Image (cartoon, rainbow, N blue to C red):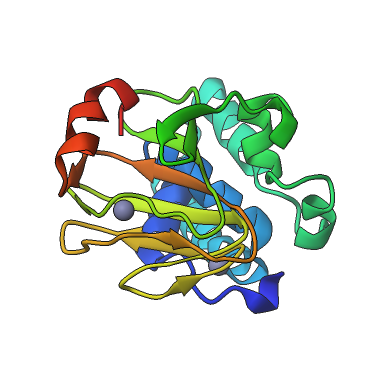
Length: 217
Ligand code: ZN
Ligand code: ZN
């Protein structure tokens, strides 16, 4: 899996994740990629070390017990380096951090149709950003759209292509205001993604625009 991943997290996301400043939906998506990707897990380790060193210098005994526990809890959330991504993956299609939100693997997901065969399931995160699982049937497309904020899309199964590139399992696409795209699932398999957004998308055509408030896309 790891050696096939071409699209990774950027330093900004890894640093913010390490510092614990990302909205929950983004944190979850970053954690899910890290659970699939040795390279980003190693890079995160470096950021955690830098962050820890900075904390040691600036904070002495004043750290409250609560924040220490919160920090330790977050560290424990990151899969141990000894547990290989393959071992984590073999337990199901959904990475462990996502399974914790769904309450199981794919068969536990409560899908809702968004039209054209595409289905979604919104995960229970804080309202600052939205995390959703997307199910795109083989060969089907997500309507053409732009972005008002940041959109992270992590491929969990299958693959999709858009105007930017081709994204396979484990790849993460980071889209912002400058990206307009129409993701199309590969013919070979239904595509399942985890997508996090911090602002509504901008759809080009009328029907998705009308449906948008109901779907929270
Ligand atoms: Zn990576
Ligand atoms: Zn998008």
